[in-house]
Length: 262
Image (cartoon, rainbow, N blue to C red; front, side, top):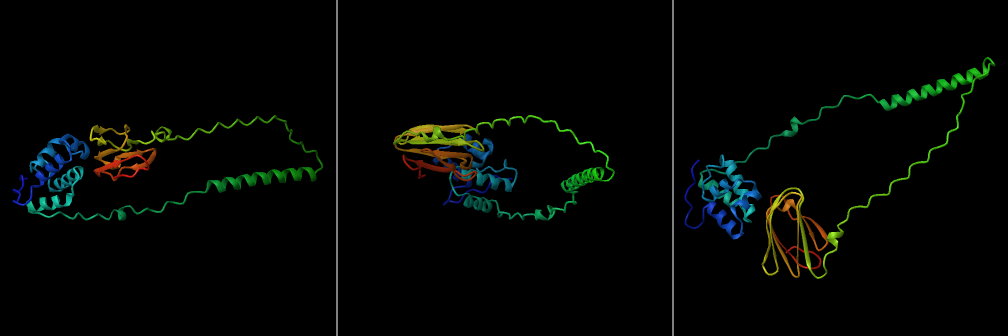
């Protein structure tokens, strides 16, 4: 695969546009690689308009889309520019009619064991009753009655005390007049950046799956999240759920009081 055609005078190349957007977002190559799961050498090659390491046009377009979303720009113009520069169009891959191969064959009718068991019990009870009735009235012979042994019923075990439902009391007990933001990597890892109202960095790095970070400020907390679908937000004691869609890069601002993302 070639390295691509040189860009025209009025627009940057695909790779240069991605590199400029990454620098504007304050992200490193390693941080973009961690967010998109595209290896760092391939990210660097694409920013230099070298698509030979992508493994083909389909993979190159996919990498361009992922990198563009990670740095916060629209991927579609870059994909179209890549197609024009490389003399092709974005292929429309037909969706195979998988539903035809997954038709559910009718299950063979299984025997109704419950009905059979009930019928057997009824038959046994009827036979015992018939035998007892015939023995007591037909030949006058004494019928031995089954002995009944009195047993003391065992006390039923005391039900266990219900377990208390887990609460977010630690989240609910937020300082009054401040903004408190807790981020939890709920389903996957994600790169995050947090700054306070003065612009001072509070954290910049990757939050591994299962990890949490909490930030507090008197006026404002600003966030950049590389994979919004992987991060769950608790703001000022309220559960806001996922920060966004899977793979989406979001920038959020929160202030004291009822949480409203800005």
